[in-house]
Image 1: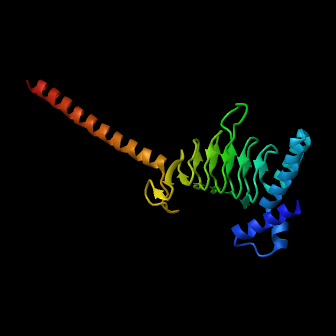
Image 2: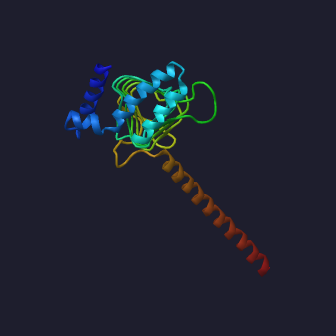
Length: 223
């Protein structure tokens, strides 16, 4: 148990340049507290002590702002940066060396039974405010951009952004324009732009037809 705790602390120093001392990390990092609390709750959950497990998870939520269902399966070296507003559902499975940021939701899409939450393979990063919903899999070494909504499986070694999320980089090959933080591809905005262009064409056609009708009426009135 203590080896795992030391490993968790080491991950914080690897991932967060703001970490300055072990005492600071142990006492002030809510993501670390949430993970440690989850280990206890998950152990109770596996022993079918569901109520006690939920009590521990809710106490952890109150103090950390991070809600992890006791049933979620979380691998080693999991890092939650800041963490406020993070929600991880009951049937989530998270591999090793994964990182998620504040406001991330790993949730379901309805009231279906069985596996209804996402699976994150090893070395996945989910950025601030992203929503990964449903029984889908985010492949190894993949990244989900900030604010994205992912509803479909993501292949390995991919970067997905937008609402709904689309793959823009796969195996190091850019499938869309350059992925800069200030210029992220936005499929929703692109679709709106396309609709605006179509509406403009329709308006021009209506104006043309209206002029034709006016000319016909003017001609008939002169006749």
